Length: 419
Picture (tube, rainbow, N blue to C red):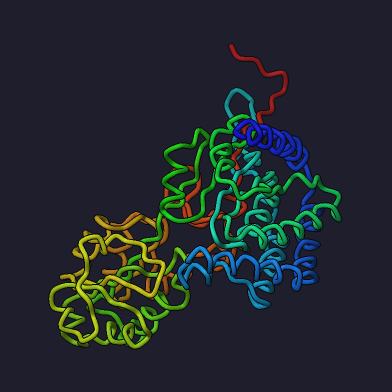
């Protein structure tokens, strides 16, 4: 059986390499046409996609997925419209390939340009969210890359239906259908094959829970864009506006609890608490959120005592950890200890405090007076994202089409020789 999967990987990888070579010089117009056609196909075939999603939802319920995880899996007309709109947005973006990133002349007569170029073949391993099939396919295509997609077992049918739409777009635009390939099996053995496929894949992007990302980071022989846990903090400073704070905290936790940008820990300055009381905690409790806390906050009716590992935990559910802190420096120290360098937000009207928060934390995304739920490539104007990279090399934060490019140097002389 292992030999069968090895042969499958070789077949997929060989076709991806050939497609990547052609995509590297494909025109902006053809890539845009493929994405526009794929968007039209998603909407025209929405009944077919929704029927496939019913099968996946049933499978997810049988597996015992949490309500938050089922929400990530679920598709409806609104979400399909969002997928189609995202494809069109990527299509309309400036082509990142061939951009002159820098250029200069040398005293020896050489003219040097640094120019954006595709990475080659991208492998994306993801769980639950079938929309990643379209997002990753679109962004890789825009950046001139071929992509090999390995979706989660629970989203198998939905991903397959969306992939068919992407292939239809490629076909209509006259681009190689192997530019966007979906691994045609639920078997986890193909994950291991992808992680070892140095001959075929240039970079792996994992998008899922801690278990998946940990597996990829520990076993991959292919370079990885790390997307670790979204342990996102939101800090209500002593100079926060109360109504803004109430609105933002509630949205950051409850809009969608199963996404990586959902707030998982609320830090409240003691002076804010002394002035306004437990209003932020009470708002969360009224919204059905379980608030796990310690010390003074346990006096708030409805809260529960936090376990030692609740600070620094990604709940992906209607649960949040909460703690009182003594000022912005204490908040910063807590985040440095427990955060995953994904997204942190400060609620304050004090410019100096906000500047200190921004300066002394090094998470991929830092926000002021805004919900952490905006930690999303689509909300950043990228049309979508392939993930939120929490590492520091090459790509960081939302990984869009520009981040899926490398660069090369173009050097021009005039019979120039080195003495």
